Image (cartoon, rainbow over all chains, first blue to last red):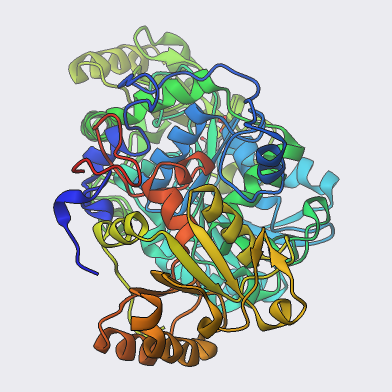
Length: 438
Length: 174
Ligand SMILES: Cc1ncc(COP(=O)(O)O)c(C=O)c1O
């Protein structure tokens, strides 16, 4: 068949579009009915069917389309396509929060009584979710030091079906050796799930290193202004569920859909179709369209913001290393960081904007620094345009044991910063004043 | 798989624009089978899909309103595309049949479904002047190129600021 290039639709170089172009355009052409150029907020609960046959096709998953916003919404779908594109994934499913996205990620994978493994270096809330709440679903997590590859191999050999890590770990400064871990999970027939929240796809793209799934808290840098709670799970589309046989949720007949097998029917779309059609349908933790809209606005400037976040954060980290009241600074961009090499490999555009430092004087001094800041906001979040400060031991990592806190890099003297987009000299001045008082 | 297959969006869109009738080899009368899903979707998008399924043909069955044919030989032409919904091993024989019947039926494209790839068959078909697509689903490609795949949260790879987006069969330059 002859091919007339001038007659083709809707499409340019496809996967060759640059990151910054996809940040603004992926998933979002002009609205098909109105021509609205910015993505409309589809504030609707449900969608009209053409006729009974169309309704049946939708409920049977025979055609693409919307039924009810718990399962899917056009504004949310635009964000899903955008995030999938930025990560280089096949598809994405947005969720009401990062934590909801984590539940959605495990939901098709782990059956009652089964196990997965997770790094000891995680956001404290994830440690609590995996160790306290997941056991109520009879899902069990083994925490492992992922810098000890023999220990990782051992836990995978004992039947862990997935390994969960953070690419750049909260509370900061720690970079995970994704490629090495992906080698181990692949050999064990398990999945590597990477929380890419702190890095964002601008700094790190875990699928390029062999990850199978990525989760995000969109609450942080993706939205970027401290406006929303949101999350996403992204599928690489590369795990062969049918061949594996270890994941019956995706490869065996699904009774609620007349016995269809997701992997057979949807191929590399299976995980994402399942996450909407079963995960969101039954867990119900769907993202609101307004939150998707705000996150879409955030993604439009992601690279620009991350560049400045990283530059400001490295400058503040460098300044802190010289400060007499500072014992240590954990920032993977510093030449003294034990993670410097891993950062150069996995985070070539910058080592992120969330990091920790140790104040001389321990717990009391840590609390004081936080309370004395004027410009830094004292709150439990990261990834805002505003600079943020917190004392993890008394807040985000409070529920953990002393050992868990130490393993997570959240000891008593630790202060966590999330560096924003302000004038960097003002940030330094604010910290200087607060440290003087500590 | 030997090497990654790459087909330009322009090539795929050109095929899906031009083709009116598809012979789907391996179309199942069971509505829960993937082939039946794809057939129903393509019908909704305006393609005529003629099922080729010897067992269904012997039973005189209709699949989604179309009489099942026993073989490509029995398919009433003109048919521009043969969609192979069978295992990769079976694709060679089906492709040879398509090459043989090419002029008589008007076949222009041999399309092998997602997961189906037969490089030997492809080489023979291309040598005979047929266009070959392997390891792709026309339903997914249609949805991807005309804006429906993204509804499911998938990356379509399509970026365009044009409005309205050119539709299938719309002769407007894209
Ligand atoms: C690395 C990381 N993952 C997950 C989460 C949880 O996200 P959310 O608060 O959106 O549920 C957080 C939140 O702080 C986080 O920092």
